[in-house]
Structures are given as C-alpha cells and as structure tokens.
Length: 125
Image 1 (cartoon, helix red, strand yellow):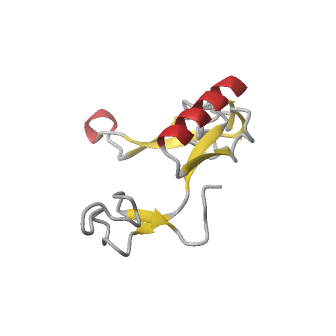
Image 2 (cartoon, helix red, strand yellow):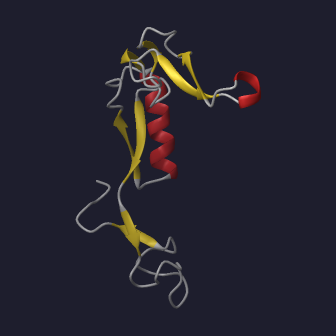
C-alpha cells in the first residue's frame, strides 16, 4: 500500500500544488474499517421505502445488506475506499485583484490566472 500512496502523492503534488494527502481518520490509514456499520449505525436493520402496490405499507424494515444484520462492519474503509489517505486542499479564497476572473490587464499577476489564492497565513511548504 505504501507504494500506491507514494505514487498518488507524486501525481497530486505535480498536478495540484495546492493539495496534499492526509491520513484517513476513519481507518487510521490502514484502509480497513472494523467497527459500527456506517449504513445502519449499528442497528442491523434499515428502513426502506416500499411501493404501496407491493406491500401496502409506506416503509419496510429490512436487514442491513452491508453488515448482514449484526450492526458491525469489517472490511474496506468506506471513506478512503481502502487507500488509507484522503486528498485535502489548502483553503482558497477569490482573488481580490481580479475578482476571480483570472484576468487583470492580461493574466492576473496575483493568482496567476487561477482566480483564487491561498487563504492568508497558509503556505504549501
């Protein structure tokens, strides 16, 4: 998994210099999740709207298909999809010089034509 993260990091840094990787807080970076089911919230059953012509009821209570009804989930992390990291980006605001257009007497010299700048006080280093 480490080689995948290194490759992802390299591509992200080269393509999007304002983005970075953070460890997934749900799985702790290992790509696996073992805990309360995120679909049924540990109840083992989910409410499903059933068409009235099929059951005569508006709502049906069914066994959760994600955890099999036991309320626990052990498998690939549903947040990072098993990678262990998430892409985050530094907060950006609309460029005050060009108003977000990216142009000011040609290409805006402040935002370099992007239309937004990093929130003041943060840097990519």
